[in-house]
Image (cartoon, rainbow, N blue to C red; front, side, top):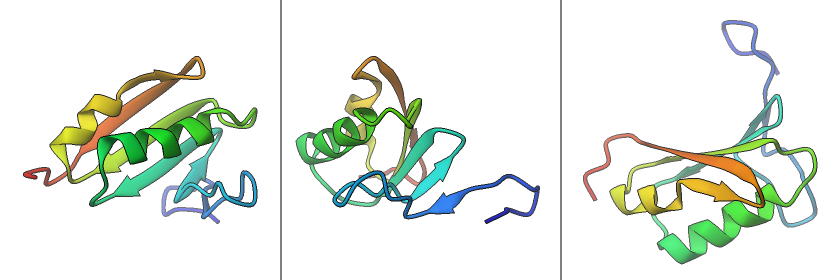
Length: 87
């Protein structure tokens, strides 16, 4: 699929039977979260990072606590963007 600026992306990209990030763009697995504990979200991001096709992981979230997920998993960078994050 193409976005308005011609960036190809895939929604619910299937990395495996159980691993499907919300969006996938040029090797970047993007997960969008409104709720979820830090350990649960970290495990999910770790699963994504294990896949060879994933070069980076981006978490878009409404929870400031998820900032703890930023860093590196499986040697791949993990970035967190908090939007409206007042929780």
